[in-house]
Picture (tube, one colour):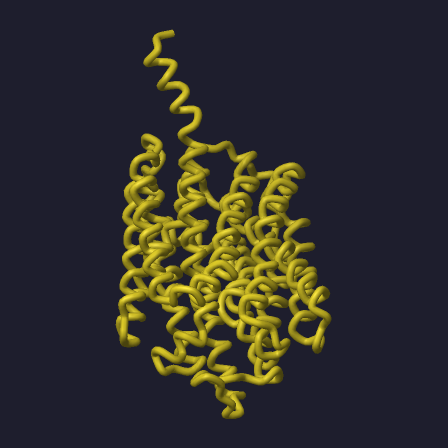
Length: 417
């Protein structure tokens, strides 16, 4: 064996894992951008002169772009591959942060947030496409769970550490730093990512692919399950949990951000654990059912049991997160319930529902809060009562119950691998 041949073999052995790692880092970065508004609520309300409904809508512009692009992203990934798509997307997302940071008016902030979401839309389906192209099916759920863990690390970083940065240098300078990190990540992905030869080719037309996927009952059930499991994390943890804890429990913002970080820490633990157990058992549904039931009960307890001790509150939030992270199995399940050449598109359809939960519930909760606002103000921002928060979060409780119903109606898919 020549030196050049050995070097090539070594490179080919580490490149798939490194490509997956960079894709997971992109998903991590997308989550940082997803949750940062939750630690800037007061500053954004003050600087843009808006209430909860408008702020929720501004934050949700990320999800409007992200969710609406998922089907095109899936189709493009199946046909083009991840390298060019993910590199360009990371750069777009980074520029969105820079535009948001420079905006003095709400219109500019909307544009920036829209670009952030449009770029981030390629992160999750991109890393799943890398997995589909370069890893065996028997490791798919495990590495999907590990990628989800990277996202949760991003959510954790976007809470307490970003809160400290906002307090120290302001929200605008913080977002400039976030944008610079995104540009560096784009450069790394261009250098490392490769598209597997012929892996992205598809002989099925776009219309035919969508008809097959949309006529499949299991596609819809997995989508509802994914939405229900992700909704509390995105709608509650991603925006409204910090102001809820500071108002209802009287916590400092940094402390509240640390408490709510437990939902993201537990997602980071639970997602790879659920994937490993599922791959080990060769089954998806039993784990999904158990996760859905415990996640629904624990979240309802967090919202409706009044003035819980802080340790118990944190434990219930963590329990919800570790079970709701079973959402990652929806991607393995929908992949196995649909033809192989449509795997990225099938996973993208589920991701429409998962990320769409943020687009639905962040502004919906803001609207419900405004409906129950009693006129209280603090530092130029609206303050909402405990009753208003519980009323608004009831929408998430309903979605959690819908997730339990959906997963009970599913068929097992693990044996199809």
